[in-house]
Image (cartoon, rainbow, N blue to C red; front, side, top):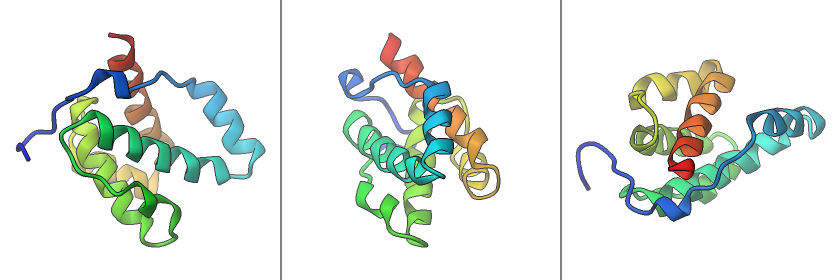
Amino acid sequence: MSATPQVTDRSAFKEGSLGMQALLAIITLGLYTIYWTYKTANTLDQGTDQSLTPILAVIPVVNIIAFWQISNAGEAVTEQGAIPVFLLFLFFPIISWYWVQSGINSVASQ
């Protein structure tokens, strides 16, 4: 495992509409965010050199580990460090969601 996470498989990344994701989060009363966390952890697990455990995203309280894993692997697709993204996952999740999804969209469009 390298010090800085790297993208290893660009084909694992698919663009996602941030607007549609926000709408789905509202319509499902936040349940979509659990699915997004699982899907994002799975994508980063497949597309980076980091080893993530996506199933942790659906287990309450333990999902904090998934947030850390996503934040750490997200360094490969964003210009943000793991600690700021993780702290935002805990206190202002919409910002970290935007950063990570925007990074995924950027890699997917290349």
